[in-house]
Image (cartoon, rainbow, N blue to C red; front, side):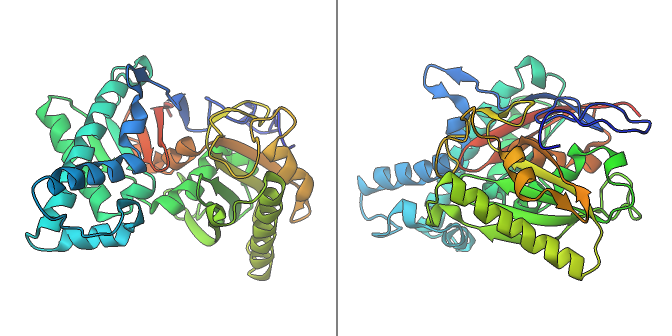
Length: 357
């Protein structure tokens, strides 16, 4: 079953659909909110490039009165590690500049979150997990902490916390929460895919259900990474490469006698339709029109990998911010309503309602 509905034959007989609001343990209240004001999409003010823009803005202002403490290097050429190294310096002008830019970014993030919290789907949100590549940096963690202070100072009673897993792994681990328990019985792991504007990551996620029934101990066992932005592949070549990544993982699992469930969970940017097509928001994906009515990623993968461990392959796909947010399900059990944002090429957003036991 590559798309459409799958039905179980046990107590949980709800349909399983791509991009579903009704998931095993949570309801997706909203995702991919496209909130705008006069300046455009508000999320564009708190993505990865917005932080670089904040650094560049400070450099331009500083040059009005003297030398740029960051020298000749272009802001776009500064690596995440180099920016973090500057933050660790003592009171140098370069460190002060990066801190000032981090504060500006935190202010923008606070404004965006405060705006989301006014949306009906975010009302009652008690905690927001922050993921995405920016969270995996000292500057990102500082911006999250600063935004928490600013929200408190404005009287907004919501807790802001970095996603617990490394964001690369959260985007894979969250896929286990897309799948009803009856599909996983008797298996050790599932295959998961996280498709982004720069990278594609595929992994085998160990369920470790003996240690925690809520997937709180789920871990990435092995993973493969492809930085497709370096290769600029066509869409067809992208799918072929992804299939090879998954086949490599299947081979490793077989060799290790790891029982894979016949399931592939996918996180992908954009609005995901119930048939597995991408309705909109896939513009950053590599090589071609992923939003075409003639293209269906889950179906393409199911055709390329029709069986896993001699069982028919089932592919399930949701928005990438939803999947990364789902990795937090075990830590959000005490909340009625919670949310996640992912700071990367764009600003992904999702809000959840926990289901009652």
